[in-house]
Image (tube, rainbow, N blue to C red; front, side):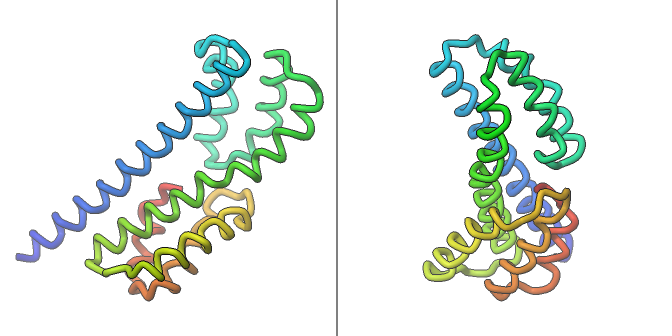
Length: 171
C-alpha cells in the first residue's frame, strides 16, 4: 500500500512538470506567432536570432542574465535603440505573468499530491498573491522559492509541500 501512495505522488509530480512545460511552450509559441504576424518575419529568423539568449536563460534559469545578449540579438534583427534599451527591460518585468501562472500550476499540483482541497476564496487569494509575488521576485535563479514558500504557508500546506517545491525546482 505504501508503494501505491508513492507512485501516486510521483504521478502527481510528473503531472505538474508536464503541465508546466506545456504551459511554457504554449506561451512561447503565442509570442513567436504574434511577432511573426506583427513584423512579417519568418519564424526561423526569430528562432535563430533568439537562440543565444534563450540558451543563456535556460542554462542560468534567469532572464536577467540573458538581457544583454537579447539586446544584441534585437539590434542584429534591426530593432530600434528604443526597443533594446527601454522596451526589453520593461517587458522583462511586465512579462512575469508566466511566473504567476507557474506558481498556480505548482500550487495546484501540490494540493493534488497531498490531497488538499483548495476553496474558491483561497484560489482567488493565491491568484492575486501569485501575480504580485511574480513581480516582486528578484531576478536571481532560485529566488522564486521564497514566493512559493509564502504561498504554501497561506494555503496551509504541510512543510513537505515546501520541500517538494525545492526538490522539483521547475521555476
